[in-house]
Length: 332
Image 1: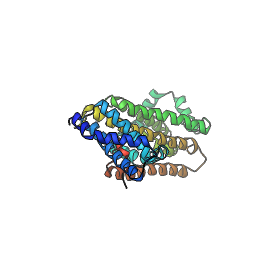
Image 2 (image 1 turned 90 degrees about the horizontal axis):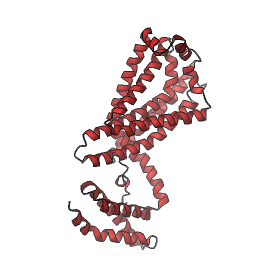
Image 3 (image 1 turned 45 degrees about the vertical axis):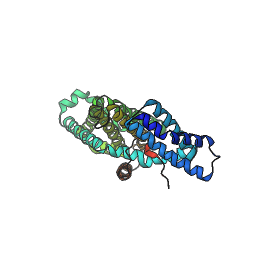
């Protein structure tokens, strides 16, 4: 596309939209309708320029004009709440759903590695001896020992904040470091699979694997799923560096980076919920079936949210890219 020809062809529409935006609330009914039509049209122009001829000067001009027109059309307060709703109803589930094969494969690899390590540790006393001294293992695995007492080692509120922060940093590491061809993400997943496998194996070696599951399951289902989603998105970002597809590498990375940002914002909320469960439910006096049931319900709610809303949003054309074009209001 010849950018100069494009600018010349649409200059009048852009100037008219800028004039209507400046007049703000002093518009007649027909002018208000014209503002909405021009806003949608210029937003389309912005998408075309970004995709085919990303001239910095034109992009900056149109981005500013579209942002000001959006505020004029919907109002700053109403639009912000509307976009928050659209983010959680469309952009976030679409972003996670689009990466479903990546994080599903990550989950399988994690569980296989963790399970193999757990079986190895549980069945070989020599391996256990290389992990820690017998008295240290006893202190960890005994009834009321360090593994059980960890979940009540601090006041619930502060413990929840600590867990939330730690898990958020872990997820952020998977998302951000994915751009390094995904190599750090693989390392993060393997280290966490090994840690979980060692703990499971040690508890199983003393016949307390049921206690392990009873303590891990309530919060661990949702917490690990969030890790899988972050790792899958990070790996997908790393693969985009290797194979950007039909777009240029910079455009593909920009789009995937915006999708990763959407996932990061969503996982903050998911990890907050898992942190609250870990702090208030896992160490509670509720029966094991009740604690595990809460964990399963939280996991089912999250997966249902992603699979149902994500599929619906994807079929409607949403990709999880939080660019302005993903949430443009339509004329009704």
